[in-house]
Image: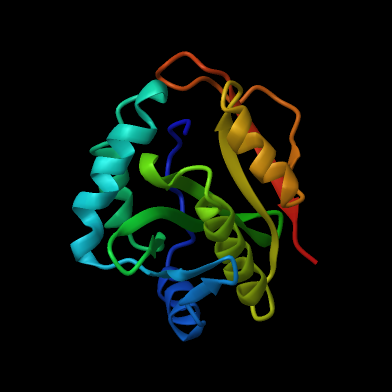
Length: 187
């Protein structure tokens, strides 16, 4: 994840959060009947920091940054969880752009022991669905995210959801990898 600043529309954070609260935030995948995606709570903070340290370490030290985002107004965090343990999370925020909003996937991470089992796909499906539901009531033109040029597995996942790479120089991660921006238009 490339570091970027938070510039949210003032006075609108509460309305985004309120709309998300009324959305169905528990998702179960057919191929993962024992795993659900739910809205994160304060008890998830240590898990978020630990997974950030494990998963994002090649790109920089995100153990402190991601828990800060967790506490930032307007950032929505969703956790995937089996009956026994948490398996991953995704963080989403909305930013104004071109007379509409853009949903920004700030982070998506799957615990190392659960990677390659469809959890990342389930988290992405959840966040795309949330963006589509919000777009029914508020102009949201796209979902966007950043990914390291070396993270081919994540790029394949995002491309399978209809994301396309944007042209431009979006900087580098602290680990030296080139940051790519991908975007998926919403209807």
